[in-house]
Length: 323
Image (cartoon, rainbow, N blue to C red; front, top):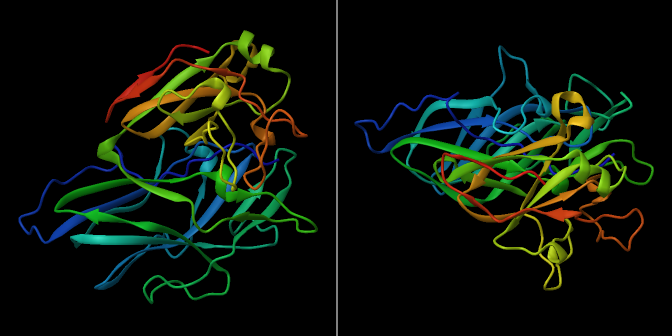
């Protein structure tokens, strides 16, 4: 049931109202929310516990629970530019930081914890292999998992609004061997300043989807610059050999008005301003991030068609021609 990328975006938008700069320029406002482009499952529920920012001066912890209960977010309810707030309006010292996010993990099927519900309706546990502290701070319970962003980011005076993209095609792994639970890799999250990003939306015609085949993995992959169709590759852990180019992200294509006879629509909610190419596939369910997948492997993965190059500008939505 493994499928394309899922963005979990930690971000802000009009949901989070910026307060502007403060007279005290030694602090800045920190806001964080969650959003998603879904995997090929019914539910990806994350039970969030805590967000920690750390730097050379120490760590700052934000409890994201609600009235003593965990912040449970079904990522599939927050696709594209939709989001759910985790941290809002927190004043912290300006400077360079790294981020850790703590969740409740569980290898057993338990809908009071983090879990995945597959397309057949069954529930499986969701865990992560990391549970360390973040600069000496972090939830200490044995059922706590850690996700972290290695790259530093800046909190400046004024309002600081970010998007952290959790690419589930890269970090969400289905059950392996005799295991019946899903796993989140602890790294692979990219933090993006929302002021630098725009979005992309478009559609896939029914003719294009039929020509691709009868597979269920309808998705659009995002590639850098003027990537040619024949060079559009899959997500994989191994390095690619030129001229193959790895995707930056992917977005699930959903049937328009719930009817595939109307074609499909897709949206990338948080894309850094710049030039990109798009590739459509109906075989995203076969793109295993741990393996090299292409048209010669079984099951096969391929990019069926490429769109025209796309230019994304900050704080704007680029609507592209239909595939």
